[in-house]
Amino acid sequence: MKKFTRFEGAVAPLDRANVDTDLIIPKQFLKSIKRTGFGVNLFDELRYMDEGQPGQDCANRPVNPDFVLNKPRYQNAEVLLARRNFGCGSSREHAPWALEDFGFRVVIAPSFADIFYNNAFKNGLLLVVLDEDTVDRLFKAVEANEGYALDVDLERQQITTPDGEQLSFDVDAFRKHCLLEGLDDIGITLQDEDAIREFEVGHRAKRPWLFRDNASTSA
Image 1 (spheres, rainbow, N blue to C red):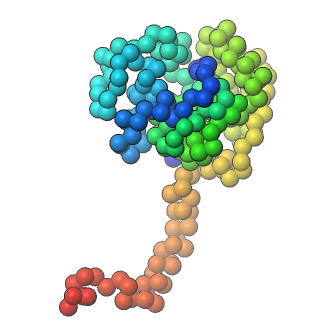
Image 2: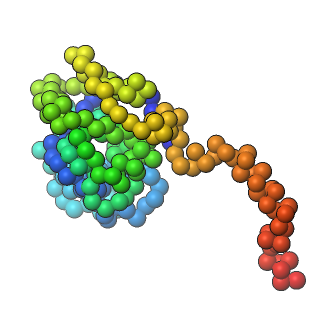
């Protein structure tokens, strides 16, 4: 998982509440576990006018011109602005995979579904909770100003708007550490790689009968 550093990213507004994980990445795309290649099908039902299928070339699919991510002014956005209860519905890590693969590094909303919240942080996606009044103001600012971008500083837990307003946000200390250091669950475990290897060597020495191969056993 890559480290999360301070950055300035353009904002795309998704003005709807209760966006569930099946809307983020529909169920037919859940067969792969490669973590990549899902961005083209992010919000598939909203982005395209037809029904998408796994492995389909999306280059020639009819797009919905009214969907926010299809509008030229929101291309290359790295911050997604959403409404309350984002990521509700069934648990699937493919949802944060799709958001990240599309290019989003931060999602801002008044609230998130618990399971999605956990999955997002474990996969390098920063979720920022701001109150509804602040989110409303951001939606209005994004709509009124093409190219609207936010400076996101995880270390200071602060977002700075183009006019200099500073918005503080809370984040669990452990999740913050993992994002800053680029540590997923496997990365955290590998920090103790030497201790794990030492245990395995000692365990094998004390109980060698547990490690006999099938050939030795059958003989």
